[in-house]
Image: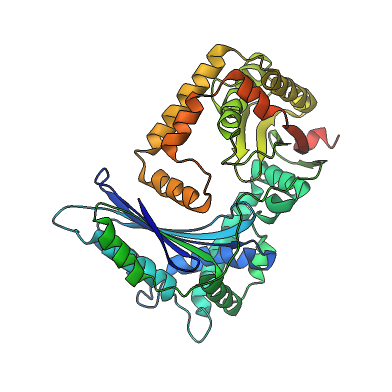
Length: 417
């Protein structure tokens, strides 16, 4: 892989490989999270994917993608750590003899979306804006109406810090936006955010480096970012009741362990044994043996230093389920899990990382992570470190793990505690 800084704050990464038929070009904008731009960023992911100056109708843009043999365009607004982010990804299948200039065409279309959005006289067209606004509001309402998502949002707000800043904007915040505000926000992001341009291609690296330099003439910018900005959360318990068929519980456990930490591989495996795998303690005991829940899993919020447990239960079982979850955490903390548990977790996690080497999207993500974090291991290095983890490493990694937040949405008939 070749990487270079084209101008200050604009980084280019090219991976040449003939392993895949898929070729991809990605452009990511990253900037310190500002609550005043969160709603705009989310709506921009709809506006910028809808039409462009040279493709003024949605069907025109779709036809262009079809012309590239079924290429895809994705624009997402997913904050990371203490930063907001807009990510453009274009991907297509290289058919030798038919679209040998695919990387060039993908880069051109990405540049079209970025530099030539449908902004006329400093504003998005009213009709187009309202259609995209309605789509965004509908999407947010559907997500926020889901009880588990609602429970997770309440947990994030209670915990505070970066996690609270990353929640989706409300329908009311999206309704308050104007075409002018969104156009201004996009101009600010394009001029001030850190930019990472990525290409996964079978073309010679030097050719693609030159192509991307020419396709993306961004001016220099000065920006300070961190993905290792750990912010301890608040302790708290939040509860509400809704007319739902299952109660939901979210538990947030704080560790402060971030990617790049020497403890992270052990922390990751410990999570697998605890609740991250089908063979986990939470699944075996809380769900199967004690039958306290319908579903249960744990996962790492990578850039928050937080382990999250999510479960769905019947109202009468809420406190018993929490008690059982904490008991299984003590099994991890004391190192009382079996050698078989550790061996299964190692095999599953190493195989999962090995499969990433055969997935173009995962390679792009890994390329981006290592570009942002100097001490973040690549996939191969992570596999090696996972293989070296011992029981005592997991015990050490879970020493600081502390319950901080309990979020509960009860079935209405069981009321609040």
